[in-house]
Image (cartoon, rainbow, N blue to C red; front, side, top):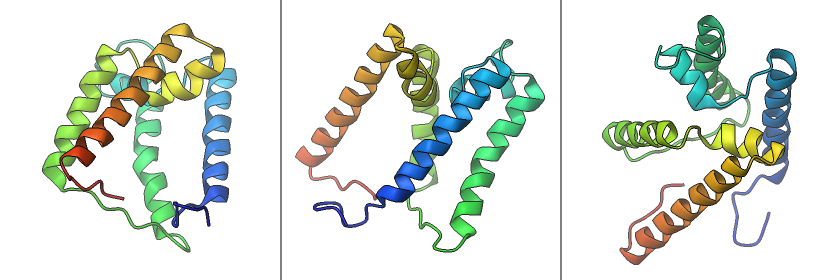
Length: 148
């Protein structure tokens, strides 16, 4: 247990990080494509015409919730909580708009771009982090609770 983080699971986090890095490396080395979720989702929904073949994009997009469900149903599964369906949908739409404006998401910029030392990705990640820090600071200033 880490001080200040009673629910931290560093080994699970390390394993998750290794698996994400391995998946990103396999996609880059095997298919020559960046494993950015927003770009792959855009391809699956027909918003983008280039990138991963559409069938592969759908397999990737469908695999995300299926993988989460398998983890949740497994031994020692996780308990997820969120504010409700309306905030979840609004947040998803805002993230989707932001990823189109920013030409990528945290997986594409953060995992793949930063590891390639892409200047655009480094700027994007600083922006993502600053926005996250500002959001938490504003929520704390107004006494709003962050779900965990």
